[in-house]
Image (cartoon, rainbow, N blue to C red; front, side, top):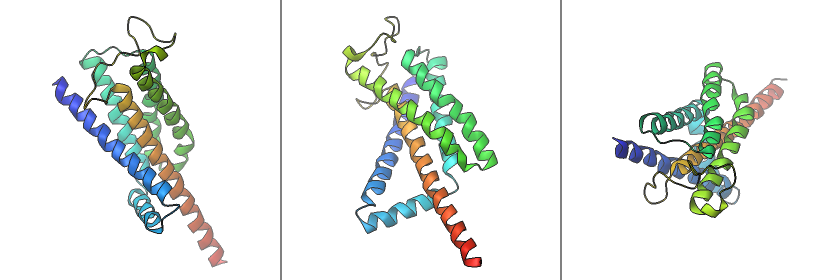
Length: 194
């Protein structure tokens, strides 16, 4: 069962990476290419109104995954794993409330939390690659530099968490862009009526 779940979470991580890289290509490339700018607008339009729900799903799956690994598979979280959990778990509640209230202002609260989580996950993954960077926050009992597994040769638990944080950030950036576009359309419609 552990191997199956590990593969499932790793495949979700790959999907998240593809979406984030695709989003970056459209965001950056759209500044230089009209075709990519059109694709960026279409992609943002395709998720318009669903950004919060999609971010909620990502946060909930990441939370479920971390709880599964620690509570079912008995993988003891290290210090940096706990820091990542501190950043991820509240996002489930925040996105749940924001989805219920349809509150696009969540981006102002969720994006910094996801950004902090991404930085911690990135540093944790770096420590796994270069153990000599491990600092005093990590214990010898549960070292932060140790990886319980590497799926596909590179996906570890902090890599999975970082991918989830990056995807959540992407959804918040899309929400920000779509909210700005909605505000501009509303302002334009109001001034046309006058």
